[in-house]
Length: 166
Image (cartoon, rainbow, N blue to C red):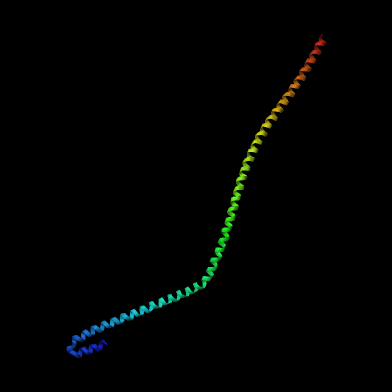
């Protein structure tokens, strides 16, 4: 087209200025058309990308709709399980409270028994001390008896000896 304009420009002579303007405008129009074609190509690509995204999103949404009942069933099961666990937690809490009370009672019993054992140990120690003391006293008493017997024998022997000497 530019060649045709150039040929007309050569042939026209007086219309040179008009043809120059026409050539400039034609060049400008060609540039605008080229830009519009580029923009159309870009927009078609953009549209195709958005269509793919929309199709993917639609499939995903449809899958979600299909999965929704399963998720709702799972949620219902989880709620039921949670209620059971809450019930078990309540039962375990009351059981733990009862065991804590029993533990407290057992600790009190242990303290009381420890006091009794300590008292018994002291009493046993005192008894051993008394028994030892009694054994020592018994030994001393026996020794004292033996000494008395010996003294009596000596006295008898002395009397006999004094009678024999007389």
